Length: 186
Image: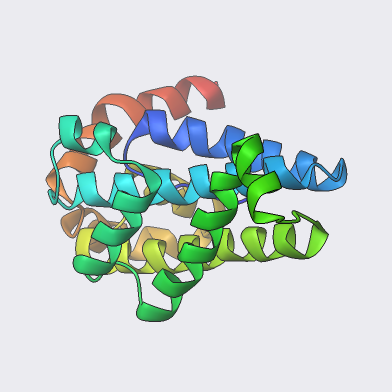
């Protein structure tokens, strides 16, 4: 499963993990329309989390954004590259096919090819935003824990990682993520 450990908002992370899992199941079930809707939802949530973490929008504003506005803001704020922005417009149009009259009126077909494009775009957006988020925001608390669990050489650099951690993430690490992980390890 895709790792959403770069997502700072816990509710978005849980929603993303669920949506990503469902999207993969929809591919296996050949539910092409559902794949498009879920891909759009995942991209929208990743963008909104980034906008929130960077202070580009308030939580109230973020929760009112629709897919089109989120991708436009992503381009305006240089979160998405021009290529990725252009590709998201394709998903936006397919996502609008949720309305039955639109499919009939436009004589559109939703098939495995377009569903694969949607899934690939999810991966492209995740890669692009996780990289940009690390550049601007640093590691998340979950990424620090994951590093501690998987990298035996991290002990030599953990002090440096913690010093560069965003203050919000330090608080989350100490008050939420570490205690939860500690109970899990017990």
